[in-house]
Image (cartoon, rainbow, N blue to C red; front, side):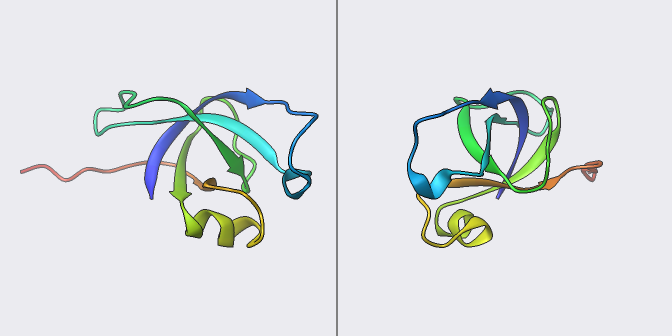
Length: 89
């Protein structure tokens, strides 16, 4: 799992039938200082996240299990973050 920010939405009228009904969002992983890391990607939203939200994302087989086991999903938003606390030294 990792933290990411929702950057936008995806509308796809032509897609695999197993993705019908899923809300697709553009996310980008964030680092410890809330900075963007890596490239944006598309994730299925299962929790009602919106643009600008910090979210918890899971990938791989865990992403499919949390949505629909037979679907072609590799990244799923499974939580909306209220706050993050990082302990100091």
